[in-house]
Length: 476
Image (cartoon, rainbow, N blue to C red):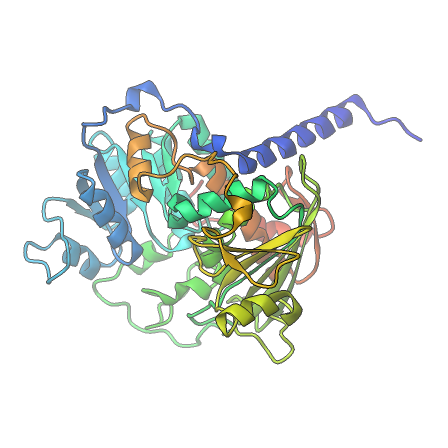
């Protein structure tokens, strides 16, 4: 047998170290500490942050308001839709609507960051998925702290880059999966890692999304672009396509492969967050997708995706199934009924979304998107019990600090405090793993995955979905 060369041995050692390193990040509450902030950008706890916002409507609106409620200064707002921008800066807002009349207004986030570089400390990015990484990375390279909505990126490669850039520039970061701050999610992680249900060999997570169009082709018509919308800026790094009314902007972009990441990308950063942390998931070794309705333009109407994870330190291999869309008569797009009989018995029906961990000694079930509550049943028990009521959990100590609030975590981190629980060090890794499901759906066959190298060993064609091309003027 031929002996490996020294260079090949070194490469194998590096890849092994990378795998263990990423796994350790996902495993530990120590991820809260994150990278140390650069001294030049530390602020005292009493000093206000000057915050700029990219994407002022939709989720960006509530993100902005929640940070402003903490006493921080919103100094600039950017949106490609002038109507949205004007509504957020009017002197006389509508009832129950907050506005920022003193904030400077921009349409192009690149111009805003260049013009405001010396006047801002932090940036909120709440755009469609395809803008997340270009805007966030530009801001981080300027030394700005970044809060970015989920999914953190549009592609696997971008997730890796977000993590690398955040670490290099030592900025405070956070992804917008609000459940990370919940006591329920953190308690579930403690319970899983304490071995309450034994070794977990199966994970099932399901969602009733998409609630937006998927499984459709691109329209053949072209409509006039509204005078208030900058369509070129809305497209950003994505390939050009004609504007079509009520098709992409303002909300229906999620299902289009050039702009969104489908039901999986939209929801899994919420619903898989708790088990990802609790099970210390490293890179998967394979990903395989079964879908209905997928084409070259939009994601599937329904999908079932299987991820296989190898053994991690102290944990056995685990199979993870993701399900979305509407269940069919054969239950293809939901866990098999024998797995969920106790859930149906206790609730009358299977919830539209949920997370089920099946261990050697018992099972944990969370019935919501954020992991805010969970139920447990040991193998010798007949019914699920709430986590507050089960005797098996009473002696499991608290090991993860509790949150002062989702947005407060990020603000504190910007001022030199501990890193947010969903900082990019771990959020980008979660996103990278989740988006492999999108790659598997688009390729249409089982992928044998090399995590450290970000490549499918059996599918060169997957590379185009791992690392997309950008239009001129955009990069990561």
